[in-house]
Length: 243
Image (cartoon, rainbow, N blue to C red; front, side, top):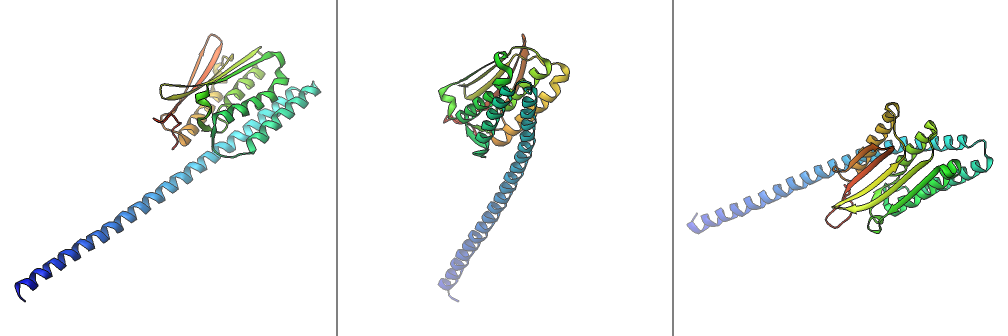
């Protein structure tokens, strides 16, 4: 074999080696990508299962609460009718769309329907105000994010008999966070704190699954008021961070 033939053989071997390396390299990358995709799909499936489990716990809790509200109004047929109608409208509103996330404006609309179902029972002993900044209304949030916090206040009021019950719901954008605050005139006893704390932990876990691990749920009590604030991080574009 002459020198030129030897050099051509070396070049061919070199090119073959490069193509072989590229082929197996791409195969490894594709395999790694497939494994990553399967892991992501498994994580999403697990997350969806956890969310369904949490939702399955929330819905019966809401229904039991609704039934208790109707029973508590049993001595006033007109109130029973109004409560039942209001709560059925709220349920119809929720069942119309089962997406895990929705604009905050829709959550606020749902709250107003929920309050319509509660108002006949409490009458003048219920004062509720909802203030939502325009910048916050389009933010995507989990379905039924605020309602359980109001439900806790109503249940505490039914058990304690304190009057009147005042509830303030505010939502605003501040320093890279969507801040949703629910304040109510309910000071919890040590006995009443346990179920509320459990509910807040479930809400915190649900927010972290759907949104961002940096979500914070804070509870404060002072001067006869109980306050729960949800700190939801925003992206640099000003939208809620979604996992």
